[in-house]
Length: 141
Image (cartoon, rainbow, N blue to C red; front, side, top):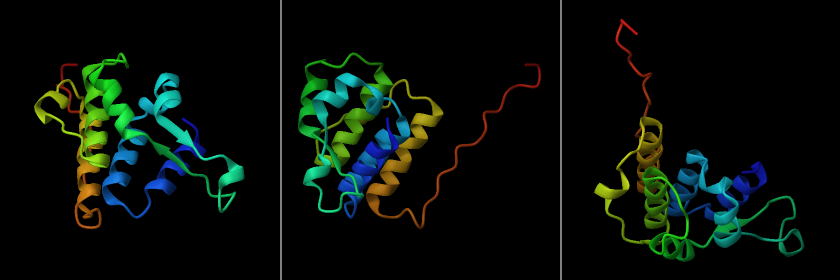
């Protein structure tokens, strides 16, 4: 994922807490926005010639297409990767998601990213902070 793509997605979502949460979740997860199959099918960057401000990139995700592709199993991925994309699509455009299924297999870092997205979607980032604690290992390791 390029910095320009991340900036373009954030610019597109600006002002919409749920869309911002979905975009930030995919950026933080750092999987889907590196996949050429996802980028070519679901992510659209606005050409510089069409921008109102040529130094402010814009890009958007076709959440409908992403959700449909997941339903058709068009993107081979782990259960946690699929869960992240389903949750992001649900936040962005109200696509139904079964949290029980979506959360299966998520590690602590991914879980923290999902929880941060939920906090962002509620608009309470200024009042709720989430901290990912260091993993405690037994002394004998």
